[in-house]
Structures are given as C-alpha cells and as structure tokens.
Figure (cartoon, rainbow, N blue to C red):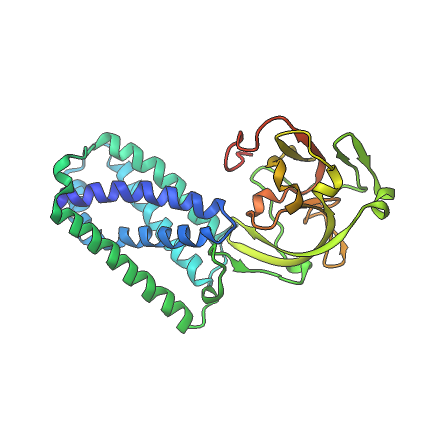
Length: 328
C-alpha cells in the first residue's frame, strides 16, 4: 500500500495541476467537467491521509535532510485544499488582501514546485507491476470515494444555504450583476488602474477619438465576465462588434493591447463574437472597469477581457502563439 500511496500522490499532483489549468482557462460548459475533476482530485488527497501520515511521522522522527521542504509541501497542500473548500462554500470571500481563489491558486502553484523537488529527492519510479489488478481496484475505490465525498459536500453546501450552492459552473460566485458599481475591480498581476481623461483608441490604421463614438454601429448585449479570481458578474454592455469595426481581418489573429502593456491575441474568426465596449449598465466605463474601452468576449474568462484598450489591429502571428495565461 505504501508504494501505491506514493505513486497515487504523484499522479494526483499532476492531475490537480492539469485540471486546475483547464478549469481556470475555459469559460464554456467544458469548464464544469474540469472543475468537477479538480474537486475529485483534491478530495482524493484527503482520502490518502491515513496511509501517508505514518510515512510523514516516520520521516520527521528521522530528521532527514531537507525535511523543512517536505513540511513546506505539507503546509502548501493543506492550504490549497482548505482554500479550495472555502471557495466552494462561498462563505469566505477574502483571506487578508487576497481572494480565496487567489490564495488557492498561489498555494497550489507553490505546492507543485515543492512536489517536483520532493519527487526528485525521493523518486518512486513506476513499474509494470503497478498496473496489477489490486492497484486498479484501489484506484477505482479511491475515485469512487472521492466522488461520494464531493457529492456529500456539495449537498451540504446547498442544504446549509451557503452562497456556494449558487456558484457558476466555473466555481465562481456572483458579484454585482446588473450593478456595475458593485462589480469588483481587478487587473492582471502588475497592472494598476490608469486614469485616462479621454478616449484614444487605434483600430487597425484608424484613430478613434470621442467625436467618433456617435458614428460607430453600437449595440447592447448581455454578457458575463467570469474572473479567474473566483467571481462572475453579468452586465449590459454597449459597444461595437469587432467584425463591424475591422471589416475583413487581413491576418491570422486580432491583437488587442492595453495602455498598461497588457495584451492578448484572438483568432481572426472570433471577430463576430467579440465587442469593443465603451459603456456598461447604460453609462461610460469607469476607470476601474476599463475606460475608455475594453474587450467583451463572451465565453472567455476574465483575463481575455482586455481593459484600457489603446489598440486593436490584425496580426500575422497566430492566436495560439502566446502563453495560455499572461505572465504580466
């Protein structure tokens, strides 16, 4: 059982990282599958505690070299699971200056690095014998047990009337829908909110100023901004669809840049499913929500909704040629 436990934990770290990335990156219904799988993986860690804890105690008694990093890994995993469970309940929105989801992601990222280091110091290499029938049964039992615990937890959250019972399929909680002033203000890592006094946006080779707004083919749409920090908000946005703004896109992608230097590239064929928005809730965008203009991209997570847009232009660089999650 010792060998199965160690290999299972190593596999769970990989699965937790993979399902977490997918769950955070997708804004479509497929995210539900990844989110459920992520929950199963997290609870599987807990179910292996009775078999792993004797190994931990034994290692601490022997005071192995590098034990401090093993303890750090344990703390990281506990923090990851605890913050994940709190995010599911919706009863705790923040932990200090960070949202519960941000703590979860930060602790998980640190834990993955520590887990890789731990495995390199104490490798357990897979063997063909590990696929024996009893290990397959153990794995099936572990998965089924995690499923039962997850279903029970979800039922408990709903029965107790906690906010988590109403969370979106991405795991995000509703914040300020229909009320832009109550919608959280967030930005990517190193960005701060710029204070701009007028609209200046370059679209392809055309410069748009405040006087051009009245001439644009504006429309209003309802769309949900689902932020990776754990909240979502549905608002009425007003703007111009990109295919009407750009015409036929002569390039492989559409590159959108913010005055902060932040940017993303979108597939050219998505131009009819994206908007350059200038208003939300019937009023101009506030500074925190992206004045003078921001991207509205239904079905994509919040980090795609570029704020404080200064340029929208075709690009010959394919949309896939960028990091899945921006680094700054």
